[in-house]
Length: 196
Image (cartoon, rainbow, N blue to C red; front, side, top):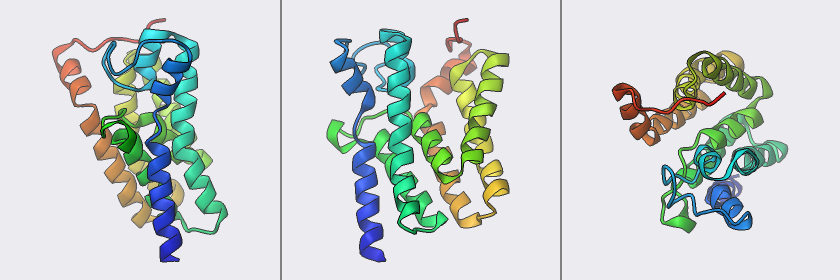
């Protein structure tokens, strides 16, 4: 099954490399998200420069990039570990897209989409943690980081698969790396809050 697995990894990475934010902004005649706001092609920056509708479409598109390849390989009979590698490939495509100079988004939405595909309860747990923390602390990036930090714990608890959990840990670490600037702003008290 090695050729099929290799094809799935490449396919997933290429799907992940399609920037939903850039496409949405182009179709909706909005500024390029790489040149406005935080200069990040992700849903939060699209919300900042284009409003809720554009951000929602971007969020769904980025989530589907993580979910669809995983659902496809699970349908084809791949096991959970292989499916988690496929999730990682889609995630890396989003963060380091081959079509856009390897400069992509921060990966949370694609990670969340992959988690939903790996197990609905797993994805729902992440989403509920994010929503709860966002409601209490009003900081989107901190909500994402807390949910990400806890994701290997609840992933292992819900899946019981240690090998797949190691891959989830790797993606979680990468999300913390992509949020370096957010972490610095939080430490200095300059990170923006969620508007009511």
